[in-house]
Every structure is written in structure tokens, then in C-alpha cells.
Amino acid sequence: MAIEKTPGAPKVEWTTSAMVSLGVAVLLVVLSLLLGWFALSNWRFKSNLLEGYQEYDRGHAANARKFMESALSWRPSHTGARQLLAKLLCDEGKLSDARTQYDRLVGQGYTAPQVYVGLGVLTLKEVETLDKPKAIEAMVAEASGYFKKAAGVPEAEIGQGHCELVLARKLNDPTHIAKAQAIFDKVQTAMDKGKEFRASVTRDGLVDYYTGLGKALASTEKAEDRAAAAFRACYQYTPNWTLPMANVLAVEARRVSQSNDGNDALLKAQADLNALRTQGRALINAERDSTMKAILREQWLAYSLAVAQAWGRAGNLNELQNVVRDTQSVGGFDQRLEPSLLDAQIRGDLALKEDPSVPVQDSFVTKAIGVYNDLIAKIPSDEANKELRATALNNLGWALAWRGGFQSSENLYTQAVGKFNEALKLAPEDYVVNRNLALVLKRFRKAPSDPAPYVEKCRAISAAKKEWADDFEKLQKYMGTK
Image: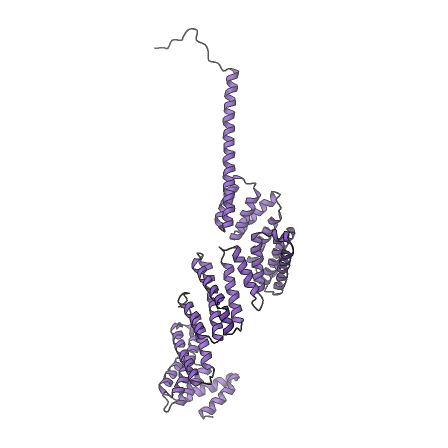
């Protein structure tokens, strides 16, 4: 059934005022959406930017990079975020990506000094892939050019110092070390004299300054206290970066090993020596990066051995033993040969040194026997350690023979002969082992074997190696042979 039309019903029409009202309403909706979007994007940008800066300040570089990337996705034109992103990428070793970001900054017309400093640092990192001197010099010159464009900021001068360090290392030219140190000294003078200059140095600039100064000072023949101090200062600014403390351990290991401090001086410095070992061990335990952990472990071991050696040189065997045991047990180096080798070397030197009191020397020899037995048990029986094992067996044989003479004990002589024979299986052409075996066999009332073949072996070796000629003449006189 059709719907009937209502007679006289008015037609629906759009009036001008209705159309205007509807248009205004739509426009307001669109504007509100746009404003909402701008507000959201601005909030997201500022939120990511702030979080990124905070993460960077905390030392969380990877998180900071992600926030900077997110911030730039909301506002690509922001130069501050892009500059920090470029630096973070450079620090991570993503050099190609970092250069892209720096190029975009320059393309935007942003040429702040820190951009050129960043380009200089980036270029120096790119030098690491080169091995031809001319190419290295050319790229370092390019980096230096960037630093010159940033003249007036402390980081530019610091960068020039790093240019010299790269040349010194890559070209193996120590003359650049002195040039680098002169530049860093110039920066130090400027910071000491100029308050404005000092205040303008960024934290990253200080890290680069102390790192470069430490490298320059540590590259000299003699380790300097200032090198360790520079690396310590660097670590204070970057506590999450443990490489500076690994460098402190390395520099201190060299300094301690070169010192001639006596027992009294070492006792005064003992608290500091132990504090660095404790700090190094704590850093090893806390380090999560496996590569950095391995570096710290090796430098801590080197430093611990240097301290143990210093105590040994000073004649304080108790402290020597304490450090060696601590390094092996608490330090986790019980399977490493170095602590045992050091202990054996020092004990062996003491055993060889003639003491006015023979019983005192006998105590040193007895201790050396125990240490060498422990060492030999650790030395692998493979080709790579054959020479080391032969030397240790010879030294143990000598110590047993010395005690055999002191106690008139042919039993100890027999043990010594056994060690010398083991050594000769590994090194049959060794003059010293053949000589020692001949001497010990001469001391028996009834020798278990004829010493003559060993004397003849010494004759042949001394004929080929003239440095043994005088010793062989003495051997002949003792043996009563011609």
C-alpha cells in the first residue's frame, strides 16, 4: 500500500545559515583534530627528546639512541637530536650511519663547531680501516681540517692531539707522541688560566682530553704517575666505561714492575696497592661485556703479578705468597701458569744466591723444590710448552742436586738425575742440562750411568756455540777428562 503524501507539507531546504553553521562545525572538528595531532606530536617529540638526554646522561647510550631516533621521527628538522644521534652512532662504531646524520646536519645549514668536532672524531675512527701510510696521513689531515673549522672550542684542540696519537700508532712513529703531549699540555694550561675556556669544555671533551693525555703519557718508555691519574679522571666521568680503569691497571703494572722500592716503601704503599687490586676485581665481577671483562682480567693479572714481583724483589716472601695465592684462588687464575712461573722465578733466584748461612740457603732451595714441583704439574705436556717444561725440570734437578750435596744424600742425587733425564728427552741438545747431569753423576760413589756421553755432548755443543767454550773447559777439569 503506497504512503499517501500529506497535502500541503513543506519542502526540506538548506538555508544559508544552516550551511554556514555546518561548515563552521566541520572546520572546528578539523582544527581540533589538527591541534590534537600537533599537541600529540609535540608531546611525543619532547618526551622522547627528554628521555634520550636523560639516558645519555646516565650513560645508557643504546637507550639514548633509540629515543633520539624516535624524537626525530616526530620532528626531523631538530638539529640537537640529530647531532646527538650522530655522535651516538659514531660511538657505537656505526660510522656510515653517523656520517649520514652529520651530512644531513650540514645540509640543513647547521654548522655549529660541535658538528665539525664530531666529523673530525668520525674521520679518525675511519682511519682504523686503513693500512697504507699515505692514505692514513691523508685521512688524518682531513680530520684535522674538521677540527680547524671548529677552532675556538676546547674540543677542537683536543681533537688535534688525538690526530697526533693516531699517526703515532698507525705509522709507528713515536715523534707524534711528543707532539700530542705538547697539545694536551697546551689545553691544560688554557684550562688552568682561562675560566671561560675551562667552563666551555663539555663532559665528552674532558673524557677525550684525559683519555688522550693518558695515552700520550703511557706511551713513553717510563710509566708516569700522571698517566694513571689521567685515566682515573676519565673513569670518574664515565663510570660505566671500564676501559679507563683497565688502562690504570696496565700503567700501574708497568710502574710497579719498573720501581726499585724496598720493603719499607712498599709497606707504606701497601694500602693503595691492595685497594687497586680490590677495585679491579670488583669491576671484573660487575662487567657484563665479555670482551671488556677479558681485558680487565688480563690487566688485573698483570698488575697483581707486578705487585707480587715487587714484594719478591724487596725480600718480603710472605707478601709475595699472599698476592700469588690471592691471584690464583680469589682472582680465579688457579689454572694460569703466570703466577706459578713468577713464584718459581723468584724462589729460584733466592735459591741460587749464595747465603753466608748455608741452612738459610737450604730453606730457600727447599721452598724452590716445592714451587717447581707445583709448576711442572701445571705445565701442559705439549709441543708449545716443551721448552718451558724442560727448563723447569732442569731447575728442579739443580735444586735437588744442591740439597743432595748439602745432606750428602745420593737419594736426592738420584731424584736430580731423573729430572735431568726427563729434561733431556725434551731438549737433548741443551748444553746446561747435559752439563748438570754429568756433574751430578760424577758425585755418586757408584754412578747409576756413565757421565762420559753427556760430557761428549757438551763438547760438541760448545764447539758449535762458542759462548760455552769457557764453561766446558771448567767442566773438563772437574770431570778429570781431556
